[in-house]
Structures are given as C-alpha cells and as structure tokens.
Image (cartoon, rainbow, N blue to C red):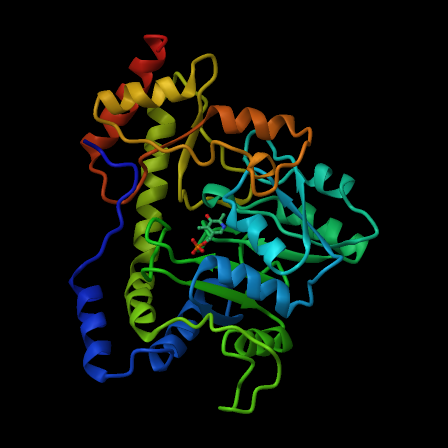
Length: 358
Ligand SMILES: *Cc1c(COP(=O)(O)O)cnc(C)c1O
C-alpha cells in the first residue's frame, strides 16, 4: 500500500520534545521565539508571529489588519473551509470567486469583478503548493486600495518571480498541521512586513498583553507551545530537502503519467507540491480513486465540495470552474517518503486505470 500522505517524524523531533519537557517550560517561551526568528528565513526576514494553528494565523491576521464586520474579503471557493471560516470568524463576509482551471488558484479577473464598495481585501490560496497569480492580484489590490492577504497554509517556501509567498500580503498565514510540507503537530505562523501588524498579532494571541497583566486590548489565547515550536524548528531544517524531493517526485509523475491531466507549474512559479493533483476527465473520479485503492495506491480528494456549497455557507453561486475541478481533482502521493519504485507504480497504475475506462 502506498499512502497518500505521510508525516516524517524522526529522532531529532523526539529529542527536541524531550529537551522542552525536561526544561519544565512548556508554554510559549524561548523555543517559540527561536522558531519565529528561524522561520523568517523562509519569508525574506519578515516579522513572524507563531500561533496554535493555521486557522488562528488567518483569523489573527485579519484582526491585526483591521478587518471586521461590514467588510468583504474575496476568497476562492475551491479551498479548505478554514480559508472562509477565518474571514467569518473575524466578523467579515467571504465573497467567493472562481479559480483558474490549470493552476486551481484564484482567477484574478473573477476577483476584480467581485469588488464592491465593501471590499476590504483579497485573499488568494496557494493551493497544493502552487503560488496564486500574486503579480496580477497585488496589482488589482493596489489599484482598488485593497489589502492583500495570503493563505500560504500549503505553500512553505513556494515563490513567484523569485519572491517567496508570505511576503506579498499585509499578513500571510502558514499551517504546520501534520500533513503539511512541515509540521509542529498543530501550529501556524503569520508573516508580515508591518511592525504595527506584528505587534497587534502578538497582543491578540496573548489576551492583549505585551507586559504581563497590563492588557491593552481584548485578545485570545492562540499561543503556540514550546513543545510544538521545538518540533517545528527541527522540521524547518528539513524543509528544503523535502521540498526538492517533492519537486523531483512531481516531475517524475508528470513525465510518466500520460492518461489524465497533470498539473502545470505557472511561469515564474516555484511550486512546492504539497499535493500533486491531477484532473480525471471522462471517468467518474470517485470510482477512479476506488480502483486505485484496490490496486494499492492511496489518493485524496481536496476538496470534494466547494466551500460556498457547504451547509456552513450554503450560497447559490455560479462558479463553473470550481464545480468542474471539485468533481475532477484527485491528489496522488508525492510525499518525500516515496521510493523510485513507488513512483513508477503510481504512474503505471494511474495510466492503466485510465485506459481500462474505470
Ligand atoms: C490546513 C489549511 C488551513 C488551516 O490550517 P490548520 O493548521 O489546519 O488550522 C487553512 N487553509 C488551507 C488552504 C489549509 O490547507
């Protein structure tokens, strides 16, 4: 059986947790501070504020940038629900737009067409590790006086035109959930170039306090623990190697898979292949996945239901590309633990199932 995803936890991670446990300081402390300063190398030295999840990172990012009730934030509907949940949790309204069929990321023309007098910001998602069209989207944000946010939960160390994701928006969010390209167990990071936004983030995650018991604003407890930060610090040292392996695995699959639509990388983009997602045309996708499973290949559907159609939002919108990709997308194993034989088997099995007309 070849698994769809596989977190890689080694002795160093275990030793790092043990070190923190022995120190007796478990909550946010020196490990979190070190993780923040080390992660800033991924985002050209920007301010990094660690929190307890990627969802909290998005939520705190909106609040720190002044997003609230009455504001609209433009987001893709083809994403994980956390993207839109975070907008709603900040008191704002997610406005769902369509995606580009090749990159699965926000369609800039659709985003521009959705701007109203209430629009406060635009938040593309770097889905599967492919940067959204940040050049077009930051241009649109600038022309209309909007704030650009980035949901970079799946895109650690991806970049466009040499500029890392997480450095284009006023606030950008990463996730360290176990299936992401690197993990801290649970965790998230907000990155920003704005020192005032960074300060508000530090207040918001810690009950509004910078100085103990001198609470300046109403805040949350969304702190990361030193235990999680210690895991994240070790994983960060492995990120570059794992990313290179994911990219090599993806290149192999794109060469060898001939019978379904393989994912192109946009010009100028460094895609970090959190997922390797093909489109299954002319077959029932779920039957295709079941047939792969029967032949020992795990796969995943991210995401079967567009967010605007979920009971939590239940909006009647016409987003045809979103509906198409939600019906056709299938993520194949691409994680760094795959062997050359695994990759060969994946490609041959996908081609065979497609030819058999599953
Ligand atoms: C994982 C993910 C999140 C949320 O991160 P958590 O750490 O699970 O809270 C947000 N957006 C996207 C696109 C994700 O993949």
